Length: 211
Picture 1 (spheres, rainbow, N blue to C red):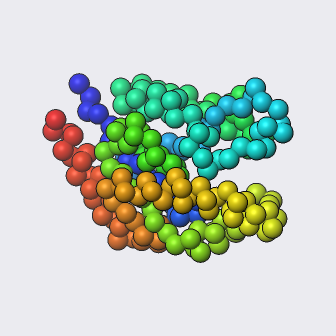
Picture 2: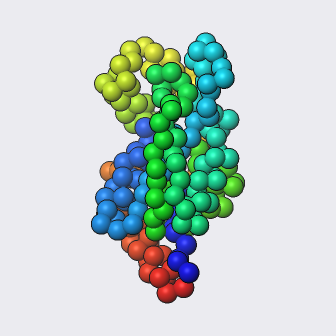
Picture 3: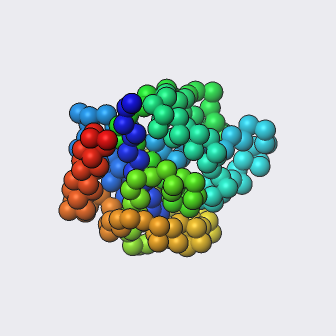
């Protein structure tokens, strides 16, 4: 029987550097069997709603995610079954008709702001990581990303951050830090913590190889 894949959850607030951490871990294992599964791909389908209703979506709230589908897909990957990952289209605020076929791998990195909020997801993880970055750094990173890459105005980013992102972070994301096995300060800049994570993953893989 094939060994069960290792699932590493990487959580943290918007702009914390969690994606950088996930990609750096991926890079270190790129010649091996590894994949990244982004929680952002699992925003709920909103095709049955009007555009006006879709524009009211709070993407930082747990109810914005289709965790049932995400859990189903992770469980399939753990059984060495391929999945069809949805593709979310932010221009129309719902899922597109596209899908991405994902083959099972030995290491699954699950990355997203609220992956530690759902106990069912936590129970599927071998290692739970929280990337802990100061709020001023996170808002600066978000300002740069949204104005440069998403065509947003400075005013709109600040408005969204103060009215939605910050309160949702304090209410839902920050409390999940208590579930983490590992807390990485300052995200992708923390090379020591990432190296320790990579070493731990290698140990787990070696242990599973002998099961």
